[in-house]
Length: 469
Image (cartoon, rainbow, N blue to C red):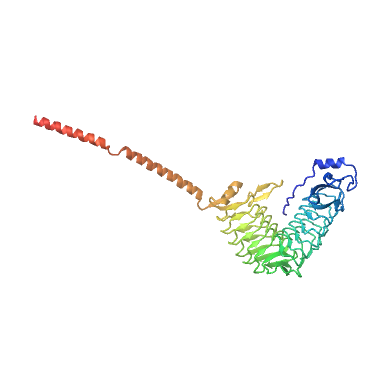
């Protein structure tokens, strides 16, 4: 499952000290006689903002609701993470005076069951209820226009939610991991659904009546022109052929569809998003057609029955963990033109004993092939795994780095270049030596020639004189 990085929130030693020093006081102490003096009242730590107070941190151990005015000033804002990890909270009604709510508001409030929003709030903040596993009911503002990214991620008890017709956008992973959510009504005003918005949510029925931008056909939620799939009913089973004309399969679209046994993907599909077919444990075969360019992170992760895949020539990218924990997979064919293979792409595939990596692959992430978790959950090499690689390629470097047995084919251009350079240097040295030798044997200089000529003339003159004498 996707790991969620939560922002750290501080309620440090100073806060604890203040709580200890303050005696048991009424929820909002009357002796706090000026706005500047209000720091803490037993329930919250505040800070002054324009026109009122902002709740910075909740310090109460038990809290159901709270007034909108403190010391004559309205509470107008709730800061980022103000209620984060308040594990004792069970119900919160936010005052109508609040106009703004920050992100990460109720992260980790594991006992929270109900929250009521004020009418002025137009967005459920990003990460608002992450890991609120007991949350059952959320009363949203009738003026709401947006549900932020990861707003309700891992709210495992949320079974029904009433989305106002004013909402135009549902963000990335907004309802990811809402395992009790089985039906969902799309508001009429909705125009955008983010990546993985409903992944791992077992929604069987989407009510799209009155919604112009989306439609449901045979248990699958599409955009209006049926070029993108957002979510399929988890009860789908048997042999499934994606409709021709679909260009994109959204993240998590078929996650948890364990009844599917075979899958045919048409030429029109260019992208399969993150976790698109994750945990489809019954799929035994997938027919990929030309046209597919990208497989997202975890696209076919945990497909325990999948045995063989032949990826198309058009594919350029395999995302991280794309076929992670495909424990039955024994054969994989990768084609020339593939450029990127992400980390953990084929991690924990024990039946995959060998693979040939195309020369075109430029990047291979950590633990992509031939790796598994040992008893201590450390990454270890599969001793019976072998790779066939091109000499000098990224795959060859990966095999060497991880001490994986491999066979190299073709010419290592780096080594060839090194040899050519060495030969060039050697030939240059020979030429240089020849030049030096030639210079050492070259004809006498002009002055030497002149002296030699004068000596000959002198000798001839002396011989002539002797003869005449």
